[in-house]
Amino acid sequence: MKKVIAISSVLLFLFLCSCNKGKTESVQHPAVTEEMAYEGVSNYCHSTYDWSVAEDNPSIMYVQMGEETESEYHVVFRSYTGAFVHFYVDKTSGTTRMVEYVPTLDIEEEAGTIDLFDYVNK
Image (cartoon, rainbow, N blue to C red; front, side, top):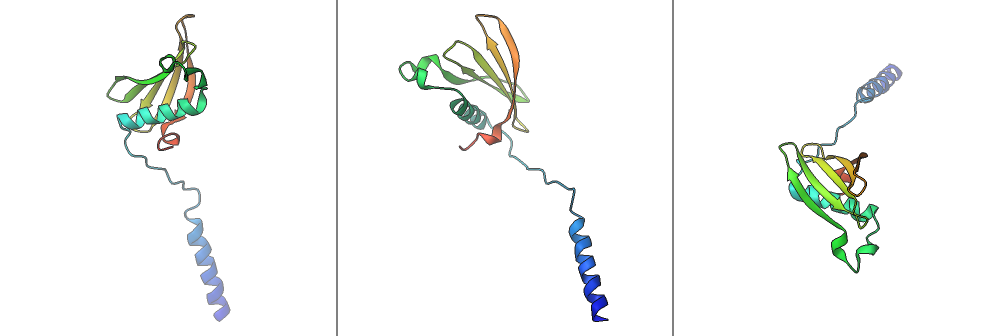
C-alpha cells in the first residue's frame, strides 16, 4: 500500500510539473520614455561604432533626438562619414528599427532592428 501511495505521489508531482512546460514567460518591460530611447540608442552607437575619430572634433559624430510620434521616438546618429542612422523606437515594446541614410549618395536602406532594453542602463 505504501508503495502505491509513493508511486502515485511521484506521478502526481511529475504531472503537475509538466503542466507548465511549453509556456514561456513574456518579459514585461516598462513603457519606454524619451530618456530611455536616447540612452539606449546612444549606448548602442557607442558600443557599435568607432568614436575615436571624433576625439579631436566631437561635432562630427553625435546622437540626438528627432521627431516624436504617438507610437515611437526618433533618435538620429550621425557618423563622421556623413551618414545618418535613424532609430525608430517603439514606445510600448522597445523594438527599434534602424534606417541608414547616406545623403551624398541619396541612398536609404533598412539596417535591422535592436531591442532597446539590451542597451538601457549599460
